[in-house]
Length: 108
Image 1 (cartoon, helix red, strand yellow):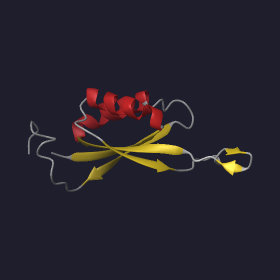
Image 2 (tube, rainbow, N blue to C red; image 1 turned 90 degrees about the vertical axis):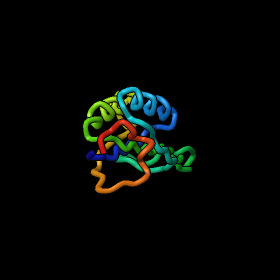
Image 3 (cartoon, rainbow, N blue to C red; image 1 turned 135 degrees about the vertical axis):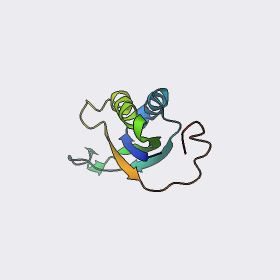
């Protein structure tokens, strides 16, 4: 089984919707980390103070056949068509351990 890691950076208010949408099309789980970052534009300021731009990083470990539907679901639920809402990308996974419970029905 070939595994891929989908990383999605989303606005915190959309995290649950993104995870639910990904699970609905085959993701078996997710890991969520809080982060902050900057985009192409400078951080907004309020009376000269920079406002922290919070984001959540969601990691999905999926089999290769599940990548397309999951990333499409992430894109739609994360409202990526709106500027500055998030990004997602896919990375190959060379080795992984501890996945027996996640992929019980998959071929080994």
